[in-house]
Length: 48
Image (cartoon, rainbow, N blue to C red; front, side):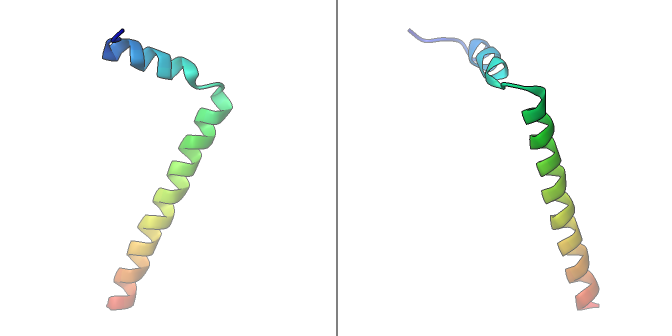
């Protein structure tokens, strides 16, 4: 009835359909990070 955490992790890894989805996910994370860092940098420059 109850599965171990390791089995859940393996199942989640197999659930990722394609490499394209993984790449897209990491590209979106990078894009959001750049926007956030850029916004913080612009705010600091504006305050100066």
